[in-house]
Length: 296
Length: 105
Image (cartoon, rainbow over all chains, first blue to last red; front, side, top):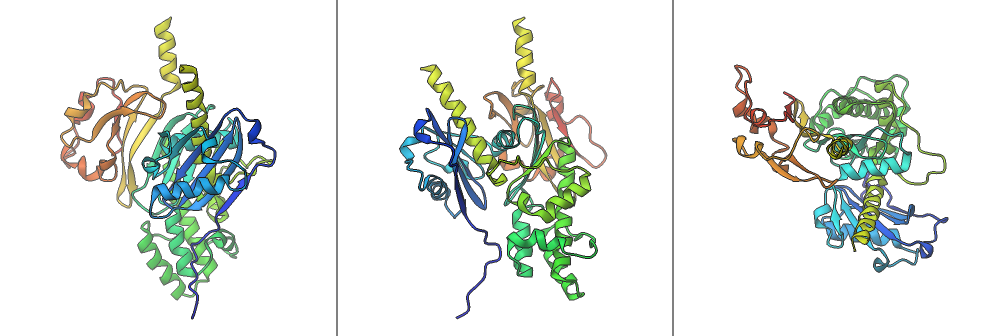
């Protein structure tokens, strides 16, 4: 029997911040971001991130959300009862039964990016599994303009999955491999992922190497999202979130095209930029809880 | 003084929401400026395709939005108001007194 390799499959992960003792915290809140491809949960003790879980989304939003939060609290000694307020966000946010409020991922990403990179951040590009969002925010992480494209898979993780599968390259290595080319090839010309795949097959037939085809696709993806950024107002304090932000092949080509370097992650930062939405959700949860306590 | 403070508050929470998409044929966005939008709801009956609704946003303010069900088909939904002979007097823009609605195409 041969084993089927799934090239799109990335590793699920979790993280606990060793410097935070939740038993000393006065409030524990969480944000759950159920995306189209990955589900993220971030648990916050007062103002610090305590733990997070990054899992794949299944066919069912409530289960995916539960899966992510359970993975986040695994080994921390926390139980669901200790979490005082949960905000749901992302594609599946309306279907999270234990979330106290649903907030759009746009507001959450802006808030989370503001927390991760600090108040300098103005332009955020979230390249997710099935959509691409360009967000402009102020120094408090409040949205000042946004644009979301979820009609088409070009410029999203789904598009990259198609190419990983076509070329039989694990998705996490696509970025690195696409940079190992002698000469930068012209970008894949088709916008549509289905046509782009056909074009990729054509290029392979012409004798292009895998790396060359990946380079052509990464560069097409970078080119595609530039127009989104221009529409909402591109500023040099620019960061990337979402799964594609970990693909160095797309990020470096985007930086080159924009002529701007993305703000690097702070040195002591251990959070995955894919968690920005969940972290933003946890921050909103903390504020909402404080507000409701004040009201009583 | 109070009204000035009020206005400052509105300014600090304002944003431009772009609803729509870009595909191979062009960019189709209806944008609503929340600073200008006073959530009066005049756009709702004005639009022959009923694409607008007024709802609470993430920051607790009321604003007009394009319904989720129409966001991926604006090119076609808005087509009856955009004859090829030239776009004049879009009903939504005419109804919106503060001028918060802008079409990208």
